[in-house]
Image (cartoon, rainbow, N blue to C red; front, side):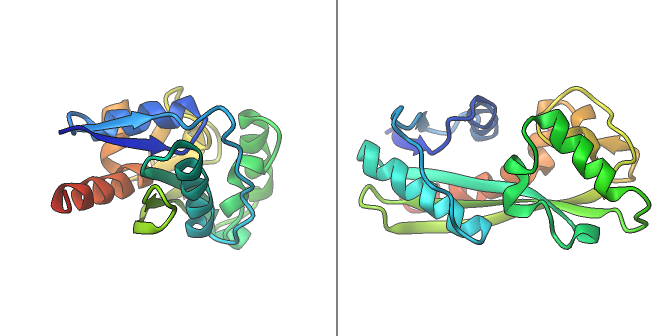
Length: 191
């Protein structure tokens, strides 16, 4: 039996990524209603993912899943963190600002964080998890795949950015992939 689940985002990149990661699961991911526009005023990734999931469930009447994710850079005291999508006006401006703020910094350690919250149709938390992907901030952009900060996030041996990986390779190691696999495992065990 197919499980209907609203994924609380208007971002088409995230929806596609979620569907790719979920693969052949028996979950039908639905978009939230067009009126979906939650106020993300939480102070953590977990709080913001809950705010989004609760609003999507309220509007749709279905179980809802939301993620809140971002990039945390050690040398910038965890910034941009929960403000990753609002760090500057466009994706390129966000990358440019981050690279400018990293000039001269020796510590390039960073991590992508993804908190996912699954709520019941009445907005109660059923399951919450966090996925992290550790790497370093590159000196310059490389790669054209992915989105957001992917072109400046080095993984593994520090020679490859996430934007240089295929979608399949990215989904195996990504923060969102790790968190979603936790959610899918939870749903399978609790059918």
